[in-house]
Image 1 (cartoon, helix red, strand yellow):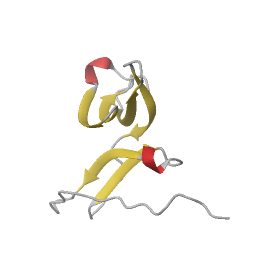
Image 2 (cartoon, helix red, strand yellow):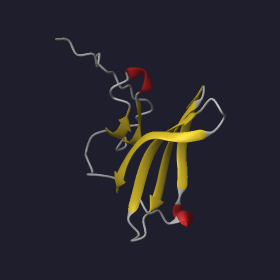
Image 3 (cartoon, rainbow, N blue to C red):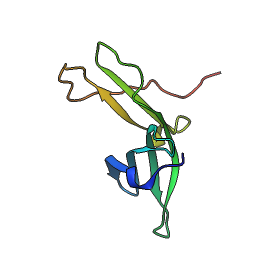
Length: 108
């Protein structure tokens, strides 16, 4: 994503045993505002490595109603699902959102 190092900002993170999710913003080399959600996992040897992420440029379209603009991964393994991004409350005082998934299991 070619980030300008001096603009990298860790906005929020979430941790559970041996796993972390980070939401990061930065400017690319052309000055465009970018955001990225990344999942890192601690290996059995104690080292951390990235295991998926999503992101893009800008804040997206403006809406007149509350909106969660999330990206993530781990779709094929429900236990590994993660998402991060912006919650635009547009003055509605949104304090918490819930993301409910149906079973990802396919039947034949």
